[in-house]
Length: 311
Image 1 (cartoon, rainbow, N blue to C red):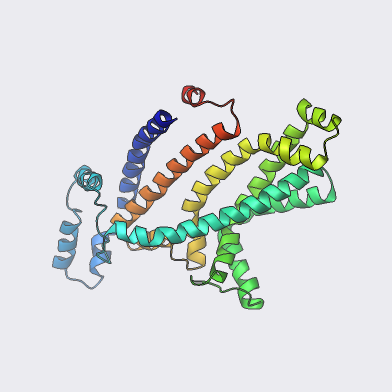
Image 2: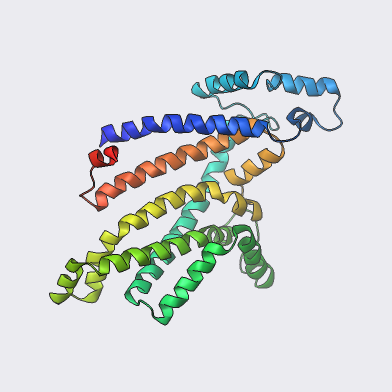
């Protein structure tokens, strides 16, 4: 297992290098002069040139990249062009907030999604099943930013139950977590229902029922464990997507996480922060996928590390 983990981590290196090249190039193709934005619209040309020289913007693109990667390999992610603070420190302060929001959203999606999916599968084609599938379809289709604004309008402005923005008490977490987790809730519901229906139709489930086992035991002890593998796949991928997809939610609710920092940095052409934030999110996405693969083997003994490597 340890050898498999090491090999997967080594395979992540070219992925992260590719991400760094893509992000490094894209941020430099954003229209506008970052040196002018950072120095200020009214700044003299000499100040603009000084900023350009400091950020190596007067050097060829490949030279800028190799200098950046050389510093990165030494643990130096650079300094923010605006705050002048180390990028690593900026991300260190913001990442726990994003992780808290993502975990809360994932917890909501898992509890509601799996619960609704299991009940829908056991009550197939019932009124409850049709209603849940309709909600799941709506949850996938509704844009996150629109949902966030509607949640603010209803629960903050009209009802006054929760704060509309910011971070402080646990009440500030409720609206952004539900907003971020709704689409994932809908997806987990659909996958859980589909997987449970497939498992409930297997011969060994019919055998368990024929032995006189209580339906609750058949569903939760025998069927659910075998139905979890595709659900875990979706949950793992969605957790990584939620980490990166928190950008809109954090912007709508003024949540001080990496997503909001990333948006602000793009608008101000703060290249070092943009590059650092994207690399950190990409790294966690790779690690989450590794964890999901390991959970596969724990859920299903038929899956081996050797067979995964050969696929």
